[in-house]
Amino acid sequence: MTWLVDSRSAEETRILGASLAPVLLPGDVLSLNGDLGAGKTCFVQGLAGALEVDGRVTSPTFTLVHEYNGRYPIVHLDVYRLNYFQEVLDLGFEELLDPGAILVVEWGEAVAPLLPNRYLEIELRRSDDYETAASDDEDLDEFRAVAFRARGPGWERKLDTMRVTAEALLDALSPDESSGERFTRVPDHVSRHRRLDLPDDSTGSQ
Image (cartoon, rainbow, N blue to C red; front, side, top):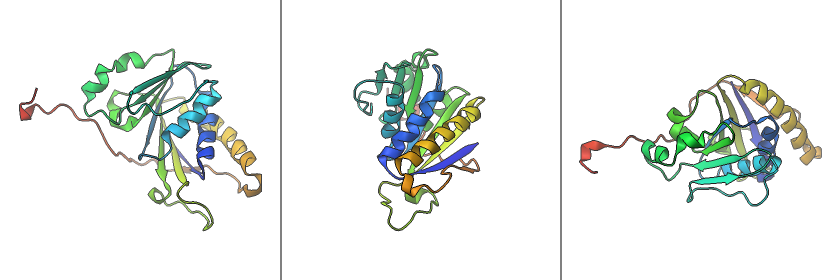
C-alpha cells in the first residue's frame, strides 16, 4: 500500500515527520529515499522534534551514524557514501537494528536486502518526479511529492493514524489554503535509484 502526499515547503515536510512520530515504537525501521536535497533530513528533524529530541538534527552523511535521545532512542544512519554491503555490516548494522531504538536509514533502498521484513519506506521526490498538479503561483522549488509505503504487517494501521494527524496539522499551518484531503492512495510501484554492490573480486583488488 502506498500513500502519496504533496509537501509545499520545508515546514510541511517537517510536519509530515512530526505526524509519524506518535505512532512509532522502539524496533520500528524507516527507510528514507530520494534525491540529494529532497528533504530527507528535514523529515527526520520533524520526527525527532516530535519525539522530544533536544539539540540540532543534521544529516549523518560524513559521520554515517547519529544517535539521539528523546522519548525513545533514535539511530539515524546515512549510507550514501558507502559502496558495498560489507561496509554497512562493518558499521555494526545488525547492532543498529536495536529493538530498543527507532532506526532511520537515509538511502535505505540501497541496503533493502539488509532491512527487516517489516519497515516503512518513505520516498521524497521533487515536483517533476511525479505527475503532481500544482497551481501556477506555488514555488515548485519547494514542492515535494512524498510517498509512504508499508512493508510488512502493522504499518497500514500506523499510516491511517498518521494521515489523520498530518491532515489536521497541514490545514492548521495554512487554514486559508485548505483544499481537503492531501493524501491520495496510489498503486505500489518500484522506484529504485541505487543499490550497494557486492565486492568485485574479478579485478584482483584486495
